[in-house]
Image (cartoon, rainbow, N blue to C red; front, side, top):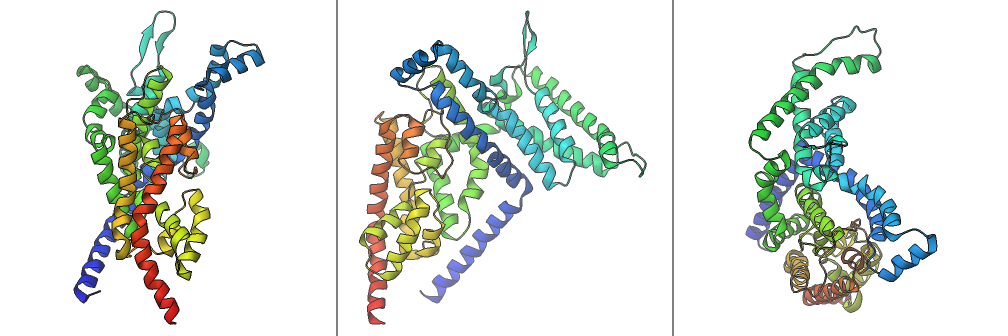
Length: 429
């Protein structure tokens, strides 16, 4: 590699490193990322119950009905209790996790900030009036559709709370009073002022004739939704993530911390439509990006495992195959290596993009069902199994098999070129 090329690569790597470091040190980005990670277990828990509550095989539903002697709608409703208490209130849960995460990074009283953010979020949430029940909060008002509002309310709650706290505007208790007693009193004025701010904002929003969710999603959230909800935007996002990985930076952590709320909102729309007996409207969603647009590096592992002649590639592929069953790619990324290996730069950048486009086209042509939104699986769920579960169809599993074949063939000529060089070096030693 020439000296000029080496200098360019070093400069580019330095700039990418500075950008990634800035993103990873940004408390707001990391707070949102950590908040979404805290929310993930509940998406999985709810999905387990939702699978059986909305099982697509009529014979299975009839079997359970006959087995327990209860009408199908009744036992399905019992299973939906868990869904309604977790995934159906995604916006509320993310508001709580965001408030906790950002208050922790700001070294504020976490409990008081979380409670203040929760009250503020509910102030911004519309209610309906029913004669027999009074004012009622609909689950739909605190679903994943309200995630943007939840995150913004929690972040601004913490920002305002910190500003008031730093000004010393609080009830000061004597030093002899235990912290457990003094903390609630000290937070009273900051919490009160935060609540007043959001109450005023709510009144102003009401003047527009829209809800806070509609207003935020149609303004601030719209550009991100357009970016994350289209195949062209998803390609750009995936390319950027792959570029970061290539330079040794955690692309998933940086990119998905920003985009996951968008994909989660699209996932929720799919879930609502599926439960209503309609076709899921969004091909791009959290499940699509996680389980269909992240199949790429597996091709390097499979190509080397099947065709490699050099000891290095044989050994690396054998070590990498078991972790990659659960989509853990670091052994391959750093073992081949893929990182900063310009002989593999083309498949490193494009393999997952190509496989993602194949999946998108297959779903757009109705050859494979769109992810239903009923099941949200962790990223470590093995390929083929995840395709079956998120689409509720064997065709999802077959699609992932085809993707694996495509990315393996994509990587093959590049892997063979590098492998042959390594093999010749090993023979000459």
